[in-house]
Length: 381
Ligand SMILES: *Cc1c(COP(=O)(O)O)cnc(C)c1O
Image 1 (tube, rainbow, N blue to C red):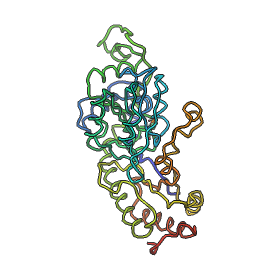
Image 2: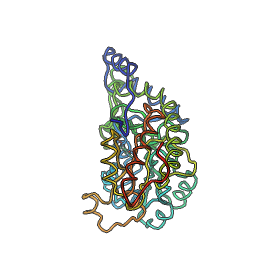
Image 3: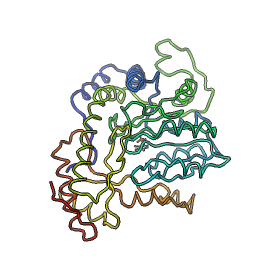
Image 4: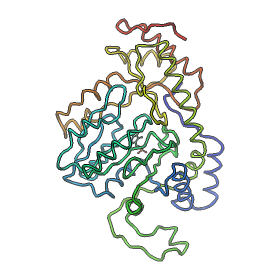
């Protein structure tokens, strides 16, 4: 089965894990700190805080920025549910914003402006599919309205500028992301005091950790604020250090495969639209395409699966989930909804080659040709 996403793990990761076990120290310590420094360096920022997941990092970001009950946070619905759940964790109210368009499925600035109220305190931007939103326009919008800007950079690890668009940026190292620690995340913050608050909140709000006390760097600790256990551990950090070393090569491979998809789809499946037609910085995390209007997606999915090709949908809109429908009824986001109805995510990961892309496009063309309303033109590759 050709999978939508697949982690690249091997001997180096095994050796790194064995070294942590041999060292006798498995919880947060020097390797986690080294991973923070290395990940920050790789993105040209000064420092970072490693966390247990991107979800944990987004939660800490909102908490550190003081977002809470009575506050509204502008969020996309075209995202993974975790982006929006975090707003509920701190007792704030998510306000759903539509996408710019079918070719640019990033949060719409004009709809954000329309949804902004007196109570709006923050914006959650998502680097959907790895593509970065417009830094200057969002910063200007946030500054003009006194809003905090939080970037969910779960899809964009490894490219210049990712995680630095707003006040806080948060990455994910879940198993299907561009690099993985199985579970894990990393936080950047523009303001050093915000980053240090996030560091404290990560570990129960304690002013020193176990290792610092053991090594005599700290005697006791105080708890000045209510924190959480959102730590990373040495095993994950060791895997993260190995993966980080390969990330730019993997992202380059993803870019090449994405370009192949674009030219082959244009040639052999012109009725299938591939978003992000204009150049834009991207980590090419996933490969979303839009099936022709009216094409029966389930039939296409079944035919691809029968030929050994897995597909996925990114995303079922968050405002349609039962939890959100019941709490925030009557939300309508026409562009997000049309995008979600027609979207299909094709396999994209660095273990793939050109021949895989050709095979996917060939099978997709054949599948669409069988659907009378949406025949593909052009010969299959
Ligand atoms: C994967 C993902 C998350 C959650 O990341 P975890 O590390 O699994 O918590 C959040 N937002 C987006 C857009 C994601 O794709």
